[in-house]
Length: 309
Image 1 (spheres, helix red, strand yellow):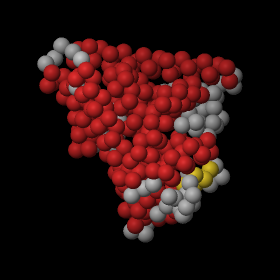
Image 2 (cartoon, one colour; image 1 turned 45 degrees about the vertical axis):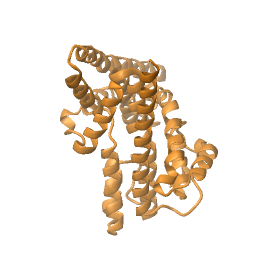
Image 3 (tube, one colour; image 1 turned 60 degrees about the vertical axis):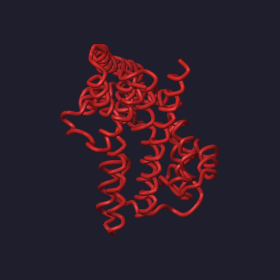
Image 4 (tube, one colour; image 1 turned 120 degrees about the vertical axis):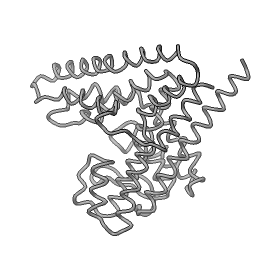
């Protein structure tokens, strides 16, 4: 039950306080460490693959070993301060409020008719694709897609790794996911250097992405969505994206909301009209409900185990 108390407190801290400034944020520190890897291509793919793998391995050691020490130190504290400190440390590796706020900023700008501002919000906070020429419905689509994909990356996966492996598991996941987000691209600089991080991220997200998609199916009706549509689209269209994991939650979101999500030249997901500003708000509400569902499930399992013992 202590683990569930930490989880609930961490979610409360996240929603009430949000994230600290980047210079004090552990993920910001991870980002600066990862940025130090990136150099002009060395010409030999095998060497870049080796260096990328070595960098990920070294980074994991640098990040995880101190957290293991901290977790062991927390064990000597009384229950209340231990739970509070662990909740604070957990909050730092996931972000539900930040994700929802990013979506709401894009939504409000679109509702106000300020397409340029909405493009800026989406480009800064949600996606890496160019947004300068996107139409209103493509901006809304990009926002909804990002909310769906980040349900896995920013919420479900780090919390799942915490429940399975404690704080070291959550921090290890966050480091790998941050590395993938920064260097896991198929371009001249990152193609081989970033491949180890990208493949490891794919592996770590395999179960959380499918868990997140299933949770979207279950919670869709609570946000005015369609459970059957979410299931059908997730099952039939998850393979349309380049990522082996992102398609599950994006297709499930498209089906749940009854819209078509599109990344021009890459994929279309779902069947229905293109999304509008209100769809972004629906997507944000849905990921909040998914998070609540997963916490309730975790609490129920913990209670059941406590009663059984």
